[in-house]
Every structure is written in C-alpha cells, then in structure tokens.
Image (cartoon, rainbow, N blue to C red; front, side, top):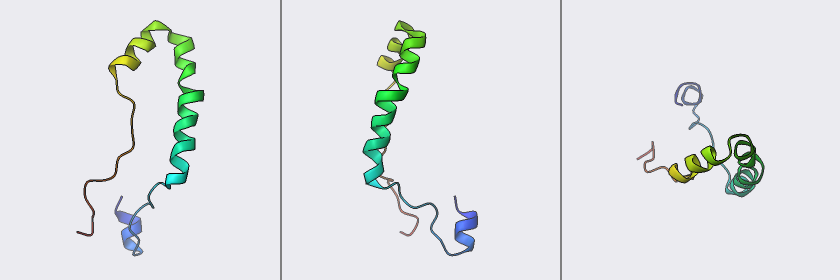
Length: 65
C-alpha cells in the first residue's frame, strides 16, 4: 500500500505488534480451527495435513533500502 500513506509522508501500515501475534494465533488455533473440523470431519483433517499452517514472516526487503 503506497498511495495514501506515501502522499502524507507515511510508510504504510505499522508492523503487527508482536504482543498481538500470540493471542491472535491462539484464537485461531483454539476457536476457529475446531469449527470446520466438526463440520467436515475427516475430510478437513486430510486438508489440514496437506496444507501447512500460515506463519507470519519478516519481510525480506525494506522499501527504504
């Protein structure tokens, strides 16, 4: 996202605070994942085994380099 923040001298959205990563990941793991497991059963279990969980990563570049 470059348009509006760049127009006012900003650098885009601030990084996701590390203090919010663990609670957010916990919410997904303990609350959101069981719902499709109950609904789709073994089919969803097979899908989870085939698709890796999304893990946040540090960007490999910086727009100011």
